[in-house]
Image (tube, rainbow, N blue to C red; front, top):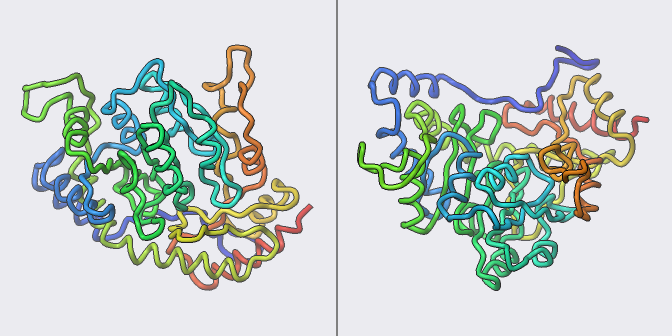
Length: 369
C-alpha cells in the first residue's frame, strides 16, 4: 500500500527478528515447551523492570488481570473502580470474576484515571481501584495510592501498555497490590502473546502460581480450583529476547515522540505530567476539527493511524443497562477524548524521513474539513 507521498507507514510494527526465531527454535528442540526454565528465567529478569517484585507469567494480559482479581478473592457484590476510557479487557476482567466495574472519568492531559473521580466513586462496596497506564503514560499513582490507603483498598495496576514507564522514579507495576502487563505483538515488547503479574506479596504470588496451573504447585496435588493460563516456554524465550531490547526501543520511541512534539502544530500533542516517564505505546493526539476527515487525509498520505478507543467501555453492549442505555455515568473527559483522539506511528522502526512525513501529514490533516 502506498500513499500520495510514499510508501504506507504502518501505525505499529511488531518486531520478530532472527534472535526471537532462534530462541523459539531452541526451546522447541529442547522439548521443554510449557512452564519450564524459560518461564522461570523470564519471570526473574522481568522483576528487574519492577523494582525486584515477584513476577508470575501467564498467557495474556487479560488473564493477568482476571487471575489477580481471583487471587484477591473479589467477586459478586464487590465494586472495582475502573476508567471507561480503556480497552474493554480492563472491565471484562472485573465482570469475569463476578464483580461490578464502577466507571470513572480521566484526566484531560494524561488520558489516565482522574484521582478526584476515583475518590468520589468509593462506596462501602468498593474493594479495589484499577488505574490504567494508558498509551504508556503512568497514572497519578501517588494520589491513587493515598486514596487506596485511606479506604483500605487493593490497587491493581493495568500496565498492559506501559512497560518501563515510571512516576517520580518508581516504575509502574511496583506501586499497587499487583501490576498486570501484556505481551501482545503490538506492545512495546512482546512474547507473541502473554502476560505478567507483578507483586510484592509472596502469598499472593503463590496463589497466582496455583491459579494459573489448575490449582497445583506439584503435579496432581491440587490445592485450590484453578485455571489453565500458563505461559509457554516458547513465548517466554521470545519475551526474554524482547526484554533485553526494550530499553533501546523505549529510548527510540521517546526520541520519535520528542521530534513529533516539536513539529506538529495542526493537532494537540500529548502532554507528559511532571515526574512522569512516558514510554509511548501510542503517540495519541487530539484533533481540533473533523476527526474523520483528518483520518481520511492521513490515510491518503500513507500515514497509518487509529482511534484508541472510539467507544468508551460504559457504552459497549455488555455494559449497557437492561433498557439499553449507558447507565448513570457522567464522564465528560472520557466522551471528549473518545471523540477527539487519534494515534500516529511512533514505533522504533520509523526512519527520520518517516517522522518528517508523519509530522507534515498531521499538520495537513489537522486542517482537513
